Length: 299
Image (cartoon, rainbow, N blue to C red):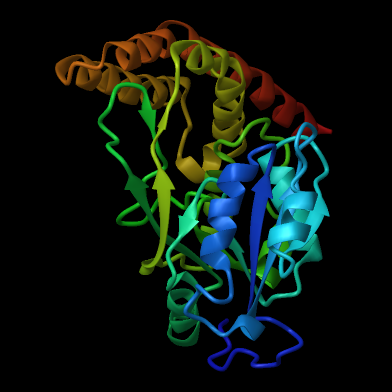
């Protein structure tokens, strides 16, 4: 499965780092500064950086031309983050695709750690650590933390390009960023182990959302969740409707209780909305997608 001696050609990089972005130039600049060849503790001939840009108000092309000329800028396809990442993968020349996000701050040893793993571990996909910057226990704080593996957050994952394209990449049907990485993870696990590389580290700032923004995101996130459970029912072992109900309600109720105990009233309010409204949308989407899949199977 794994070539123990990955290519060392200076014409073909080992890693293609792919960063989807959309109108977040300040965050993107901080991310790219950490991937600069003078900052990364890794041979600059062994990697490339590709930014795929869905921005319409503030495209990042000018920023990259002025400050980061070593980065390849590509106009994104529109849609969501999944399609944007796939666009970058099409342009990539590397044997491995390393995905991160524009609001992440890669550790200076990120690529060196992945390189060491590629040389010693038999796998076609890996996930790295995502550490929070700030206090994740603040009210309305959000951050994709991954300290022990088994999550495959797209903020820090690496997939062999051949395997990525074989599986069709991220599923672009997921509307916002959410569950498309977990969907790919389940498909990858059918073909390869996915080890956790603790030294391949990304730092992710804590984001504090206001209530209005959190409420407005519920419908699209519910749609993504329903799609995820319908497409992956077999992989997840969901054979009964009651199993799905338990899976989506139990963590929300536990999160609601945790927020109340820790004095996070706004976060508790959002969890309550998910219990009363968001999960209903999840079940509606799951029913709709499941019926469609059944019709397609019969046809």
